[in-house]
Length: 404
Image (cartoon, rainbow, N blue to C red; front, side, top):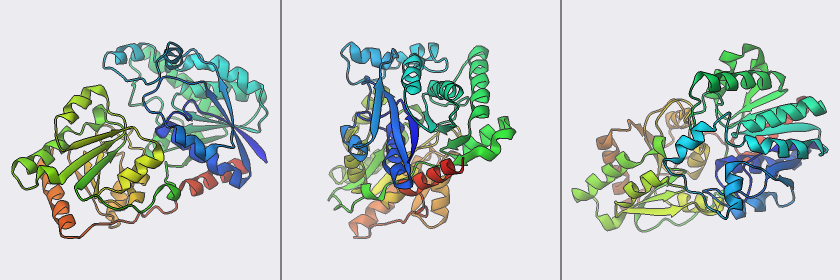
């Protein structure tokens, strides 16, 4: 069995999409003749923890190293759960060169050269992990596989401001993608961006989106109260205020009884939006839950809410999970990053996309779905992307590795 060194900063007990994608790859790779060996860091302070996610990969070998990055240092100082503050952003931007996880590099590199493997797989962000993979590939002459969970130079969550930073990142992006034997991207928009900048690497770039695991979706009873659920992080480009205003208008006009309506937020909510969300009595905040419990609570709702604004690089990572739930989906905000949902809606999946400010349109649709539920008509959809299971996507990855 071939051995794959998988470098992933995010790994259980951390939760969220950054840990989920490598975990699901590692879960299924052995079924296709590849043994994953995880290289990650020791415990850090983080906003989303999920001990249960480890159950999927209980038999996978994991190497945990030291790191001097800020999250690791905060953990050593006694902090376990990190809550981002607005003023933290200034500090993060100052040390975003290429990111604040660069102090992990010497420890990850040292552990990597002492390991036995046939291929190097690096998932990012943090993008400094790509530099670790590059250095290991140069030292060991092993093929390098890059996994872009987000765009690098166009990284939307922490933009590179100033000529020096952009020049530095451009240099490394060109250098590392050139040496890579295989490049995996999570979205077609990233592939287009890389191909436009570096046409000579186009033939080695493949799209493997974030998928869904059918094992995680079970049929559950619907609550008596009409429930709309949002799954994911609430932050600047995913601000739910306009959608909540639409719901509040229905309640104020007494079209929906306040006690007969609930909007559930499953996931981390940044502090600046927490107070805004809490002011609505019909809001229920579940916070970050273990992945299995989060999917179960989400799937038990009557309707799903997706919020997205910003550029084509602000793509929601859970589009396939939303579709796998079968729930009707209201999308608040139009973006080039939700093409999976757009295509599904064109193929008769029950979903509607509204301008972020179109509170009237969202209000009418909420009321329509509410009335249907009250009349015993519960809408169900069927994902048109049945091939996008985590197992099938891992099979595709394994086949690409074998071709190398």
